[in-house]
Image (cartoon, rainbow, N blue to C red; front, side, top):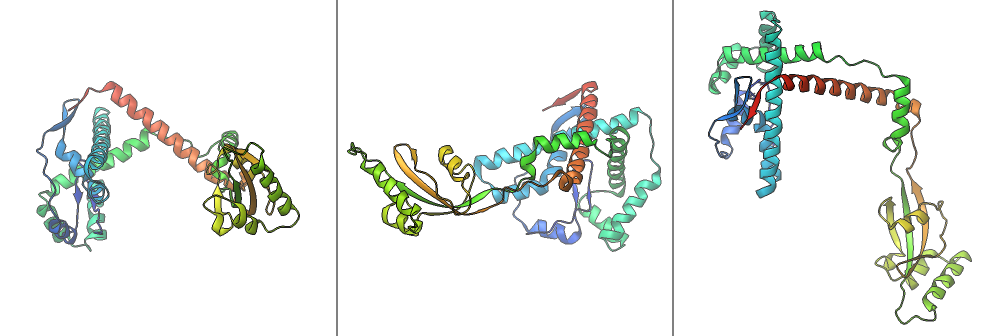
Length: 328
């Protein structure tokens, strides 16, 4: 797999690659080219299809390896729709920055560019400039795009200020209503004997057979041997061994009985769909729930992140509400 070195993701969505990575990309089979046009207009500022494509190129390359046909088209459509939404939000944020007549020092961008040259081009400024030129970008365009990225980050920091801690009450409530998140998957190692019903079994001999098998097991008979002799399901040859089974695998009636057994216990006869089942639990694992104390920090982090996302969504929704946005 080609390792992409993402030196900078422009506001327009273009990925700047090192010379080596650019050469590797050039060696790949070319993808269909899309004629450029207007993807959206945000308060009279245009977002083009090429900007959207520039943002989605890395993801689309992966999708083309994973999908084909209609599913590929569907996946690419979704990726491009999300990219367009992100570009619209970015444009709204930059416009809000200008409307508030805010400014950022020039050296912010210069420092960012120097960091990129040092970290990704070994401090070689000329190689960096040549890479820009090879991809039809000027230093001025690069600085503009980096400035816009810094603006977006600064405006998010200014307008999205979630609490850095969550209240004990909210943490406890989340733990109470999401205990399954902190409970390990419960599984049982199951053996089963299945005695089918017979259309001609008016005398109930099949149920009597199941009762006889259960009596033999209760008296010390080997369950595995009984399954090999009498069971008529697909696991007969392996002594009724179903291996490790998790919840939602068995029919509800069987699941309730099987998961209610302790290690080594054998069930009563379970009648289901006219057939007769006897199950044994050879072993159990999982099903333990971590205490609130163990997961408190994890829950708090999640709640803080969720609040931050909610505040950001609300802020962006307010910007959209005040804007004139047309998509094509």
